[in-house]
Image (cartoon, rainbow, N blue to C red; front, side):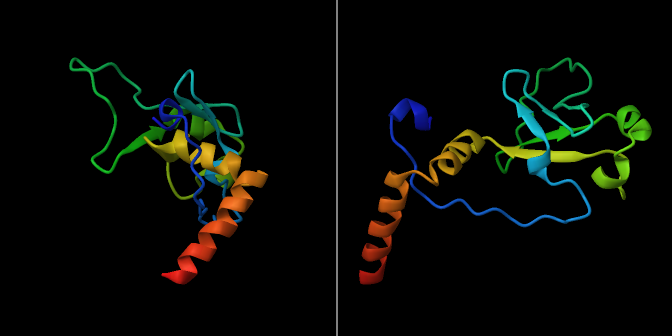
Length: 127
């Protein structure tokens, strides 16, 4: 949607700090074409692991898409203690607006963003 309207989102994007002993979401690679995450061990985390009679979107009411690994993959993985030590499988969520968030993160270090941030702080001080 952001790309269709031809504007750049100059808003700050906050990242939550993750645990140091477990892989963070940033350690997983998202493949947009296949719509899967790939773990550091190379295994896929998919939306669905079976076919449904009624097709489903997989989008929750909060606008998130859930991705899950396979129990068979996690059971034999040598990285399990660093990935999902307290659970049987690894679960990740991705917002339906994640592409706009990724674009905002990519623009974070551009000169235009830095100038926009400076101008925005001047306006916010007046309010």
